[in-house]
Length: 507
Image (cartoon, rainbow, N blue to C red):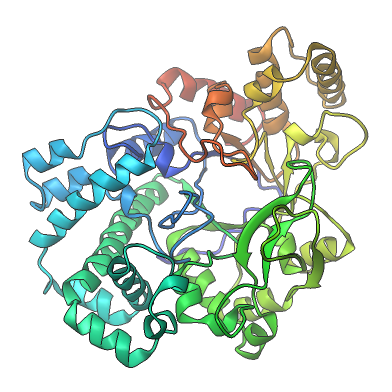
């Protein structure tokens, strides 16, 4: 889907967005889908005069259910396929559609896995495999490695490819091709899931674009170890001869965690990527811009220098910094793809190298208001936020604004409020800070009034939801990625938001 290039950080640009992942949409199928609730949310954004909808990675999740750990970096999540569309297409009966329903609560991934895949397999059993558009999709080959990987994973009971029989583990082409030929139906099932997902996604994107709303996607810097990416192209990653990791990705101790973040992803062999002209990355960015209008690159600083942690470590305290590709990757990508509408997630440990990379690319970085008010002069205070920035109250890794305020002890909360009052005064704003909701509302005013070219509020902060609506707590095995709205925002919420955007010239 081609669009004229309109940089989000163009001179004088002022716009607003809402962050809400597809999984968090309400509905009766156990997780948000690309169905009527997604379209209704677009309608809400249009009524509120919001120009951007940001989502988390749309990828098919693997172990741990994190959208930042996928079985294939360019995949779509089959859980987001709309059962009601499959029913309308004649692929599910009334009874089967009813069986797909689940309690309208937070996402229960274990039960979802047990219920949804049998429904999807039933729908596929009725799908016309000779459909011309589907055959063209398969023959294009973009999901060949993914479909092979998933078909073989089923053979080995879902185990990691590291535990497969040797010829399958090492992707012996004769062995793999003979297996796929003998199990074509399974191979085509995984192809169909991606075909159906992207048919639905592109329809939703078209609907949003026609209403003046652009979609912001998110690509993780790293891929999962147990993924089609690593299995099919191991030469692009730092692995030993047995295809095991010797060092893994993460970040050192920071605001989020005193022990750092141990992600455990494989590290790239950047020298190999460079020799290929960054072909794999260029293809990944092309796929991202086929799906989205704007792309947020997670852990952007890892492209300047990345943190390597010895495999087997229990935390990220011990590690070493290594050089990444820096701006060479984006120069190569822009030669092939043209100008890139990218948001650089530049949070965490900053140094002169990251600042130079941001300057060289001219991509807008991120500012987080929840980092601003715990004391001292810092880059997140509203007075220090420049135009070439995308400002948020918080991200999916933060507590909600109300949750953040509620968990402070009374003394520190008074200190935070004092700093918020000072920020309001510095921006010529006046706002009562009587309770948690009032204070969280003041953060929305600071967000939309600041000088950033784009201001984005997580839907939880727009609706003043507490800690129970938190999406993720980094470096924990807590109940993450499960948040869902009970209902969509109301007409009153739309008018309140539109009033804010009108006041602060973001319409």
